[in-house]
Length: 277
Image (cartoon, rainbow, N blue to C red):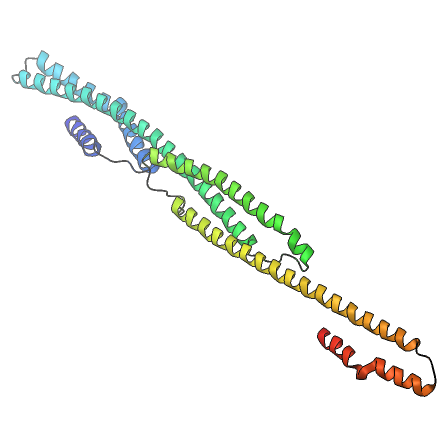
């Protein structure tokens, strides 16, 4: 029975010696199995070996005819016992080291996922904010907004570079640890950079929309000034004609003739008024 026990555990250690550990859970399971062996090894296993040795010594001391064979088997069991003890200790040490490595890898995965998720969410928020194309309703308001357009883009670039640097460092740590399974996120540095290109395209379009609106407001202002000038010219014309008419003197027939001449069928006034329409 003891021989079967040692043979079974030798088989366990041989079959798991080349295991490649992929996760903390897998490593934890292996450690539990080795710990269970150690408990059995120090408990019932040691007791069985003690019983086998006691029986063997009894046979030898009593002159059993196959004592040499018994001694050989006892020595073989002792050798296997010693080997199992060493194998178990080495295996457990390796598994504990692997557990530490897996913990470091997992912490790096979590750190990377945290940074790229935060950066991606920030980019989405900035993209949404950048869809606003309300720059004001007057030339003064739109002109004043130029500073906001320039400063906000510079602030966005500065903040992106800061956040991207942290994400790049987290990604570099994964590369250093040879970790390719991100596990906690589907986001990659490449997908983040694509999101940034989307933002850049939107910011370019926003600046173009701002320039269009500024040009439109400037053109409207020019037309407003031109209209105001022409309106004033019309008012001045009317006031001048009014003064001329008021200054007319003479007999009624003479006044009518003078006013008719001044009025001139309203042709000049109609030209000025038509220009305002």
